[in-house]
Length: 615
Image 1 (cartoon, rainbow, N blue to C red):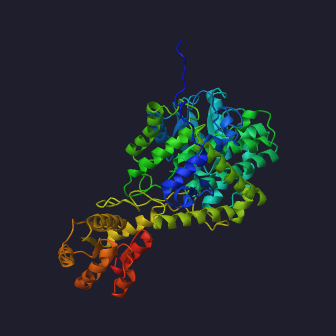
Image 2 (cartoon, one colour):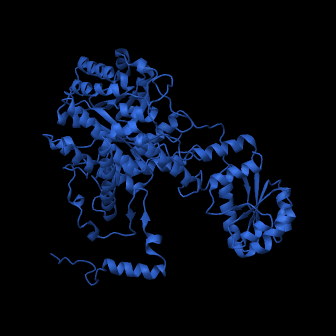
């Protein structure tokens, strides 16, 4: 047999310090911390590279799939997950037809949202007609005040049909705290129903009852670490209540289910699910369960609506696809991919089909279901897992100091924290510190809304009433820009003309920047190859009936071109300088007051321009 020879033995492995020395040379004096170290929204730094030594003190790389603390997933032999689609039950017969149809199209998990007035035995009979419940993951949800009745009806149906309780995988979701967060309603009296439902369904080993919907926080703009930390506190609140009510800890933990969102931060979302299982296992362990498997965390992942957009809506497919990949690689129990058009209409058959196929694509063609925790051992993801776990644990401990998650919700602490993040993220989007492709960055210049309008969620609990508690604000990140663009479209669409002159590279770059900037409000933009004189450019702009003339040149040449162009235009259109040149004060002294550049608040600037244009 031939001798085995290791490759590259003649090369000496560089040390971390040698790498840092080389980077310092390449940076040519620039600050390493400012240029290459990423300060995350989650409160920790991410280095530009990691090595084996960075994991020396971590225990997560030594974990095994399917074994405590389950950081590497609940399964040992595969990464299989349920492909789920939710159905709003307005007509049980029609909902059943839809369920049977999509079960033949790749779905193996159904979610039924049932209004309170349809929580009847007849509804359950019609809804589950011809569905083989022993091989399909079923999920039922209604208002918390009717959850106990729904559980009784589901149990009665399964008993009547003689299904094998060992095989039935289903959830009767009960999460009154979510209603408090969403609507500010006092649903604390309903909490007493939780132990009753758990005991009612205790003979179903694959049943879940107590659900934690942190997807609500995700869709309100929560950062990843906030969703993770509050998920732990939220789950612990329910677990403690069940145990205090006399429910066996193994039963209580087994019936917990977490509904988490997935944002566009690809690697960090993978790490989030790993850290979530790790920390939840540690929490459950403190209750001293008899079976270590009771500490497994069951997670349903739903792709976010917070970053979805009305304009350029097909980009939503790109967002939800990477989110689905993160969830799959993170080892979730089941997954819902949000249809790309959900922000402006009831999802169509087409959008629902694409959403299903997004999961089937990564499962059937990319084989994401074959390998358990493929990210394990990645220096980067192992670091993210540990860092997220540490920061999330701080939030969990803070909630415990407040008297638990429920008390924190009553005090409005959770709502204030998430709402503050939402405000910050909207501010970052306005300044383009946070990008939304097709909305605040690289919008489609020619796209019109064509009657598309953002839609809101409805509550099945009846008329609105005065809320005793604070509630979450769930305005999507793109909403401010969409409102501005639709308002512009409905009023008057101004024309912005690029007066390109001087240095070729700079005028082209600034014209492209300006077109992107102004098109975010739905303005019609006209780019040009260049003009020999400012007079020629202004004349061409007026011939095009421009409402805005944007001079695009280099900083040095603005001293030569800007003031003559401004004077020649003579107020016949708004005059804008693309950039923040050193001669800005001189230009302002000459009467020029509009400048657009990378440090601008894009949203506020465009609102100001609309006001000046009488829009």
